[in-house]
Length: 413
Ligand code: ADP
Ligand code: MG
Image 1 (cartoon, rainbow, N blue to C red):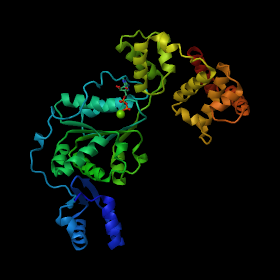
Image 2 (image 1 turned 135 degrees about the horizontal axis):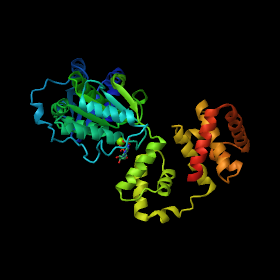
Image 3 (image 1 turned 90 degrees about the horizontal axis):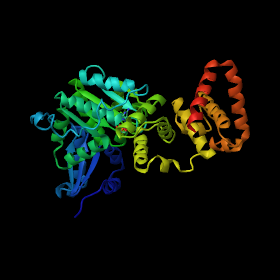
Image 4 (image 1 turned 135 degrees about the vertical axis):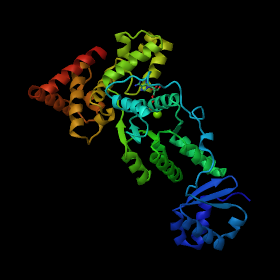
């Protein structure tokens, strides 16, 4: 006889006791090859489920199809140092260091705080939560901290939240949850990446919460990274979110100047001379994403500049796209925001500027420009141009920004 799935168990329970279905929501169900482990959150629940199953589905317990376990962590007896040492399975990638991380306005605070944290772990910024869009160096910084901490003899472990979860389930299945806990609780630095993937993984969250508290109380350093701030994580328990918010939360971005510095650095690293034309070319053909920049540079190196460039990239439509991207990145907003119908005042202003520049710098017709911004017709374009011309007369800061962007884009498109 095969195992029993969660769905099967629920439909069995529904037939005998609908009320019990509600109570079952408090348990975790982990399907194993031979059956299932039901994890009770407390001793009370463990007693309840044991009694409930014994009186209604005794055969499940007798045949070993269902096993009952309890969540509360037990006291540790094994020597934790045996499980992870500074040479142990820390998963830290040597390639990512502080020394090859380019620092600029958008990532300076994150960089500095990461450096400080290695000097004084667990004291100042605990936990440290880094967030930002993909390709901005979150993973790089976690590993950089890891490498530095290892070199100082600390016990470190880097894990993505998904791997952490998978590992936890493996240990649970093989009945070695205690070892899993010991491994993590004996760390000096825990670096958990892509925490957004904790979403919906309730059992993992419970386990992580316990480890988190244990390390936190011992002043061990916890660093988390994700694609959004803690309060925007979905399906992550409130108690965990509030722990994440309890330390320092830092957003990573990529400003224009740093993007250029990174392009120059990466070109040199690959042995390509970073001339203005090449740098501009890479700049204009990539979003605010260092991974994309790296990919583009590698392709460029393989194919050569001419082949990469021969593409018909100078069409008005492409030029509009570049202007949109550049202007959005200058104001640190998502380029897609510009095409949305409902937006904030700031985004509206940024759109006016971008539209104005499209009209100034490309041969695109007004209706082409309107379409590129998801607007109905040329009246939008006329309106934006009017706004910028009039406002620039009164607002010198605006005039300066528009002229700066105009100058930069003129060279690049
Ligand atoms: P994220 O985790 O934020 O998605 P990663 O840390 O994986 O981004 O970065 C993507 C790639 O870009 C990596 O190869 C990383 O080394 C590189 N990178 C990101 N930011 C920088 C930076 N400031 N300086 C140098 N390389 C960087
Ligand atoms: Mg990452």
